[in-house]
Image (tube, rainbow, N blue to C red):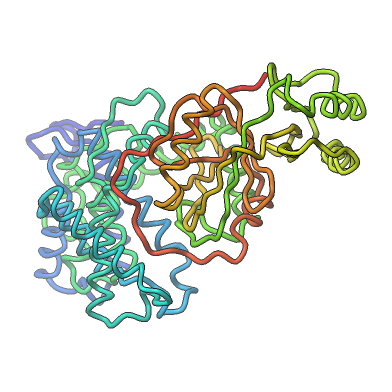
Length: 483
């Protein structure tokens, strides 16, 4: 960044000014003034606008707290996903955003007592959710608001925030700040759903843009930004001439254009993610109501009944390698799906002994997996809420947690199969076969690398859910390489 110190022509400030921060504050304010002319008319309006910027923008120390800012950004992103598509949805199907914000503000402002308030909120959510045949939209207004306020209070305490931060920034030292997450989500949710009613509100919205811009890693000087904003509405001295402000921004944009050449690979990745999302019928990072029956059985050992049939199948398919050591499972490249089709046809002509069954599917969009699984003992559990998500590298995952009644059985099943591969099916269709490395007592599981078509099939007919996950520590199946 360029820094203009006292002594440069037209600069009379006694302290150094960060020119880019000043220019940003100046031009953003002018743009805002042009767009909200009805609310920005008088000197009093301009004063209120600046007061809104300063009241919400926080202190320099707060902005330099990377844990706070990262968590704030995560909350802002959550709000963006929540409001995606709100303008095309029916009004009666929308959540009460103002009530969600009220719950988030309680967390963000430190107005709750832990764990009493979260226990009470979760109890209310469960009580209303368990009313058979009753949807949140069918509740009376007061009860609906209590439901969504409790939901807003619970969102920052969902499991996985720290993991998500680490996925976005591998090696980061940032620690999840749930209050900052709540404030970031409340700020953006409020700005997206409630139009500003005063110049003060507009100033607060501008300050949110500054908070998010500060995440670009370049550093940001708040005093300089506010000085530029004040100059734009005549509430402060013009430290840098307007024409110089425009030149500073032009140079910045030119530098960004030059730097764009160095991030072609990153842009390609984002383009692929965008193409993937365009094929989807569901939204990422959104809980959906599903009706899944998940079945899991241990992959049969190499000496188990069915070994001859399995070896014969591999020979018939021409798979000379790719068998997983010690068990009746193999993987092979299958770019066009022909091998998968051939395997499905072949296993139909190859019955197995009682207590065993074939599983076969395409994984990661490019591989075919085939094998033999034990049907006794096996795990079967229900799932009624699930979502899909992706990290900054574009890796797609579908996480879920089993119904409460099945969590203990899942824990017992995984404990009994530590060190083994297990084949997992959803509604009778094979999905993946991870290796279990530990007892999984939290009931959590995830699938990685599904195609857009598979995501659409899994969530076909699913409706968005308005619920909150239990505040418990959840463990996850660890999928290891199968080379």
